[in-house]
Image 1: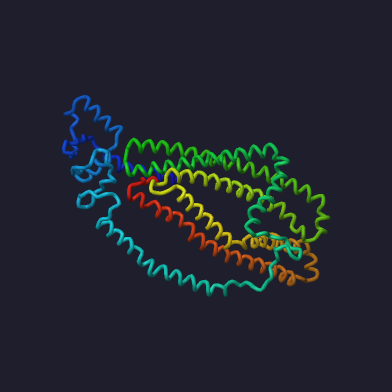
Image 2: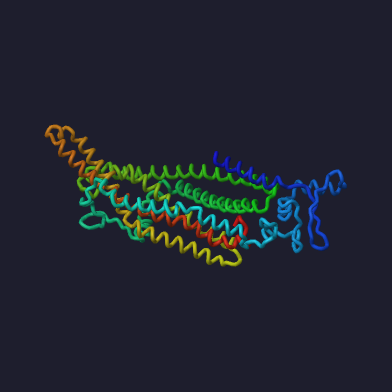
Length: 463
């Protein structure tokens, strides 16, 4: 809330500076095409003129030529200009001469040269030093790892009785969705037959309404930035009113959407927990005799049910949000594309950028499912089970004096956890390097694509 208030305050101050420069005036265009501005006194005006002046002060903003004239001490407009000509088409340089928008001058060329030299120290000193330190760190930090890299971690390829973790593209998309849907049927065929469907339908409706609010926010931002090109006091107050309406709608949707989501997740987790408890408790002895195929059932009920419910919901609605976002932003691109470009070209760039990033991210992080499986198996499963076993057999351990053997056994399990953690850290580092470099490209890429159209006056600042 504080950030919103500060942003709104800065907006009021900046926009007020633009709009408060408006003064009562008469604009006269002579027969030879020359335009002048006069500032009459109110006492010298007739009643109709006085009324027109008051109305002009209340409801109309200065057109862009008059704003230029006010800033240039009432210098007349060029002879070939008209009252409706925009400020962008006759922006003046420091000598007072008019120049077409987009034409370079000595000042713009000088500013470009200054910008080229603005980061000379960072480019020639700071960046090379950062690269050199990173290389030195990569060479020498391994000796501090304190990890036995020769340890053999459990397999997850389905061989020798191990559980298979399918990390292929189809395995983490289609096959994973099919397996998740099998568990979802347990809930929607039971306690969620009515209440779950109502929860889910409500959340889908909220999702689409939130997407509509996002579209209205983008449209509002366009009008907001256009205000800086065409200052207007009535438009400013109208934008403030619309901002409060939009902000209030976002707040209500966000609060109640999160509330209904929590109700749905808790109801789903409650039913699935009851379902698996009813299977486990009466048959606990039989499952124990089956061996490691049914290891850590307490963890499966306590942690995995909750993880399944939250992760499945997050992924499902994430896909829904991505699909609806693709449709919405494709429509925005078709309406905001400059006339010199084709909307299909911008949409194609978006699709290629997203597809390439997804493909490379999948290739780099293909081992992540295997690592996360081992994390649950080694850390949350085996190590905790060994600690619990020592606690349950504490009398036996004390009577035979096997404390040192138990310590060595526990440390051996923890060494596997350390090795798996290091593999995850290395993989996270690779993914972070790629993501931190690739993701910001979308901002500068579209800025570079649309900037020439803005500089030439083809699109407005809001676009």
